[in-house]
View 1 (cartoon, one colour):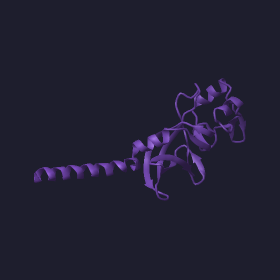
View 2 (spheres, one colour; view 1 turned 180 degrees about the vertical axis):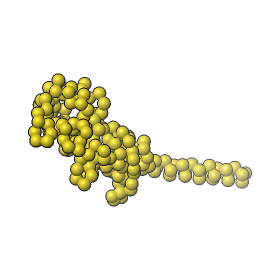
View 3 (cartoon, helix red, strand yellow; view 1 turned 90 degrees about the vertical axis):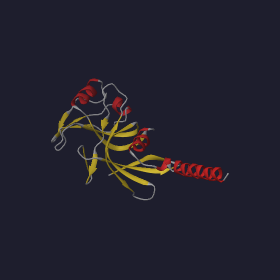
View 4 (cartoon, helix red, strand yellow; view 1 turned 45 degrees about the vertical axis):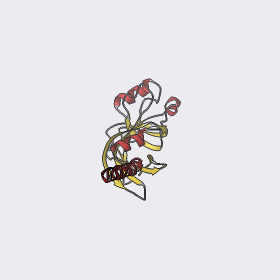
Amino acid sequence: MLHRVAGGVLAGTVLAVLCMVCVGCGGEFDDTKIHNAAEHTPFHLDSEEASLTQQELDCGVDKDLWEPPVAVSDRSVARLNQSGRALGFSDDVSVGEPGYQNPYVQLRGDFNVRVMAITDTKDGPGQNIKTVTGGLAVKIPHPCFTDDLPLMGVRKGQFNPSNPVAMVFAFDNDDWRLDHLTH
């Protein structure tokens, strides 16, 4: 009899510990949570810079997203058309700017994003906050953009395609969400 009672207490204790562990499951923060939190719902971007390939630039000209590039000072600019603005591009495409290997364009609006790489994860700033650096790309629903457009990270106030993007995640309502990007 004592053996059954002890076994029942042990089983109950194990069950209680497992339940407590599962209550905290939503708060774990790993690569899977990072991907799910960033990619689950559209994310608002406001004046973020994304790199384009030459093929995407040319296709955008062919599909009337922007005008052909014209020389302006030490770079060229492809003037944005209304059809490009409708996709969330918010400023003219810059081409051949010193220090930038690829053309780039500014984005503003709600976009589906994809985490391309995770290079570092840190606690904070603040409680229930994590800062993740890595690659983040934007999905543009148009045939010119078969690949997602990589966002440029910022260092010392300057966008640069070789810098990782700093993503800030917050834990609330029992789950993680991508809160904002830092500059």
